[in-house]
Every structure is written in structure tokens, then in C-alpha cells.
Length: 203
Image 1 (cartoon, rainbow, N blue to C red):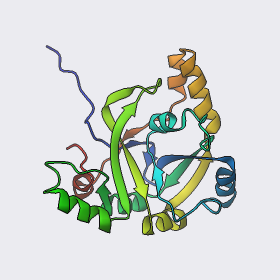
Image 2 (image 1 turned 45 degrees about the vertical axis):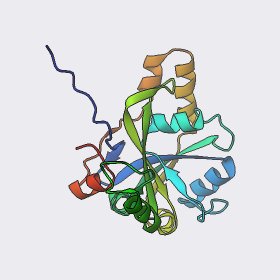
Image 3 (image 1 turned 90 degrees about the vertical axis):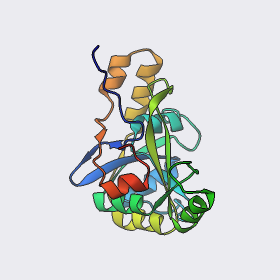
Image 4 (image 1 turned 30 degrees about the vertical axis):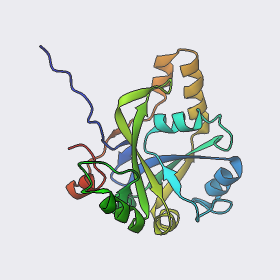
């Protein structure tokens, strides 16, 4: 019997090279336009709120409804430095208690309270927004992490709304090949062992 290679359940996959890792966020036009003009996030973006970054284009598509949901009409590709990405994961706690990973609920709660970054592993999505067997990482930044993200980590911002909507239109019309051709190449990101352990990535 031929073995079928399966994706690890929890693996960081992203468009990346030696200088950047790409994540996605969706915002209303005033926030997106101000960020694109400044090269980083500025008011009306609120640093006081937790902001979630997503390396998966298709999970972003699911979250924003292919840039059709209210206040998520503009999708930005945000390139951040590997140093920043590693800092985020190194200061992260899982959003939810996980038996077998955390010693007990108290240990998990203490980690959440002292960490400025939250990690969620949510089912990856296909073109029709259906859940897949493997998961995609979502990274929530708050407090010091937001400041570092805005002031230090961002190395590039690109408006990818047109691509997001084109993928959605092809997918809705059943043009799978055309939709797939527009997707960015997202490869496994090689996490150092200590970071993989901290965020409960599959090993």
C-alpha cells in the first residue's frame, strides 16, 4: 500500500524568505489607507486593542468573506521581520487550555496573564471556506507586542484586496484552477525547537 503524506496538524505555513514573513489583516478603508500611506499602522488604528495576524491567505479569506464583510473590505499583506515573528512566538501563550500540553488550568492561566501574545490553531480552510484536517496559526498581539509590531517589525505593506476578491469570484463560480493560480505560495516555516514547543506546533 502506498503511504500518503499528510500535513502536520499544527504547522506554521506562510509566504516567506530570509527577510520577511507575510501575514494578513483586514480593515475598513480609513485604517487601510492610513497604514499604506505611512508604511505602518497609524490612527485610526488603535494600539490599545488586540490585533490578530494571520499567515494563511485562505484563513484570511474565510475570516473576511473574501473582503466582503463589513469593516473588513480591505485586505493588507503585512511583511514582518523574522526577528519580530520569533519575538511574538517566544512571548506567546495558547488562548485555550490544552490538556497534555499544560500541566493544569492554573499553569495555563498564569501564562496567559503574563504573555502579550495569544496563539490559536484553527482549522485551515479551502476555497469554499470549508474546514480542512490541518490547522492554521492565528497570532493575537496586545500591549508591548502591538507596539513592537507597529514600530519595529513591519518591513512592507501591500494592498491585496483585488487579489482576494478575484480569488473569491473564481471560487464562487467554480473556477478552482483560476482561483488556485492566484494564491500565494505558502511553505512550511522552520521554527526553532524552543518556539515550536512554546506554541504547541506539531513535531
